[in-house]
Length: 254
Image 1 (cartoon, rainbow, N blue to C red):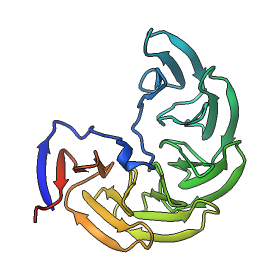
Image 2 (cartoon, rainbow, N blue to C red):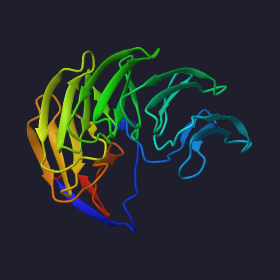
Image 3 (cartoon, rainbow, N blue to C red):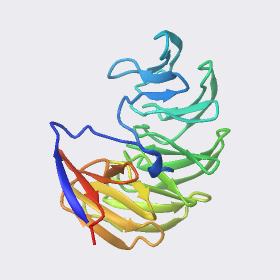
Image 4 (tube, helix red, strand yellow):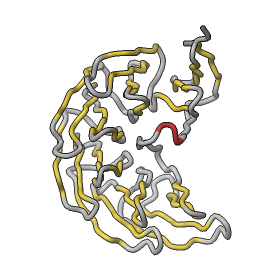
């Protein structure tokens, strides 16, 4: 493969093309544009979310959660799922902002919940855990690690992938939370994994990007730069997210 480098002034560059679905990842305070409106935080330490009409710039509704929100929102149908620092998963009506249910985990929710396979998968930073709920709020299972789980999970082929500050990337069954495999990288994982073409990519604080076989956990790829979100792309180029650089990878001409 050929690698082209793109210089950036900071590492806050992200893309979410359709070619990467189904994955889930987010940044602190990201807005969620849906159907002509955007769900966004108010202030850096926001404890509320606003639903703004992108055509009129008028606020449709505001929900006050009572605790700091760093999580981005995830939506399925007319329900928006988001977490806060009091350890609550909130399910809100996308139309009215009305609370449909609230469920608890064992610590702060920093990362973005992933919604797939009829479940909501919720990371907890200081709870060191990932918890699965049904779309109606019933707890299905919880898995504990020995480190913070800032990483927002990715879901692919009935499996859930997430990283921990203990340096391990976990692959667990979406149905029951059973650990199918784990890979120890030796340094804390804060960013979210991404699955593309059967390969799960992640970065760690050793400033490396890793690519593993998504089914077996076998190591396939390692790149000497990285930190948070590992990759993105547009169906033609694979973009490797370094600490302060983007690398565009394309197939080698034969």
